[in-house]
Length: 433
Image 1 (tube, rainbow, N blue to C red):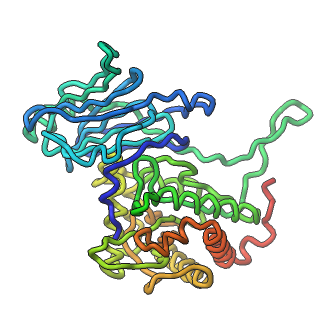
Image 2: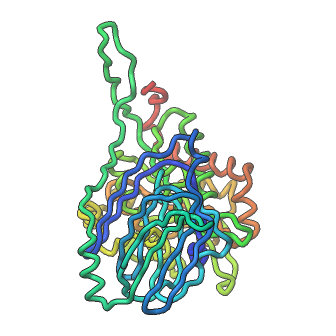
Image 3: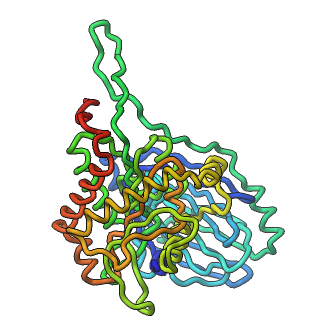
């Protein structure tokens, strides 16, 4: 079972990349698209230096100290009750433990980057509350600029009425994959399009990111960083062979909702989707070690697989996203989950992957499992989820942070990919260049 207790105390991240789309049934719908800051001005990001909560169970105020004024937009979500505060990307220099305890109407809060150019604070509420005001004060009397969100307690009916009044009308950004490579102008001055890249597409999906740390080791390593390093190394190894085109759901510290990860695979007409994670087990449940490979199933193979899937499927709640009802296009995917051929291919790749990984990486005592992971639900894309090991196990963690272990394990996954596709990709190397 994966531990999520540490995800409430989230740190700031200032890397770039990605788009966040929010779908919130019955209350608020948000869509945000922002251009990432140029690297030359990255150091000029606003800085948040302190956060505190004042008030009681009738009226509560959240205060965030900044070094300059920023724009702020706040809205409320239900089930569970939360207030989401969107601001431009900032550097969070808050003290350790910030957000883990609350006061009055706010039980706790979390914070981090959700996309390039945008940061977010999510206030977890004790019950339905109305946003009375959200604003940023100028610096005055030796005090820094301050972001303030004022809340008051209301009943559920009043909460829903207030939420409807703040509903956003902006559209949802669409993911547009590049189909053709750039080409130089010909003799006529026109820029011809190169032939489309017909190599099989492999989508690599490093789990978590941005405001969602994933599991956190007792020594401080975050799952999101460990799996990103592995996925980037795997991308480089696969691309070196030239036989496949690799697409990353995220290539930096950016939050990507689960539904968007599925959409990326389908938009790219992927031939294989590999989601990469690292597991954790509470001390109260003993110790576990080794890598596990998961495929999609309506019924989990065991209780540990079921708990892990439940935990992973709640990842969007970290960023204040409510996906209890999927958008229409995702719902269509769920309807088609019974497609047998795709599941058979997923199982075949999982077995091939196990046969390659077991020679270089320690495997779990039950290395092949299945459960209802949302991120594996592209009905026409063979998909697996790899848990590389347990950050709660000191030996596994030592492997996860080792470049030598990473290189050997990446090599085994690359070999499994070649074995899976076999002769179908023979002779396709470098055909797109």
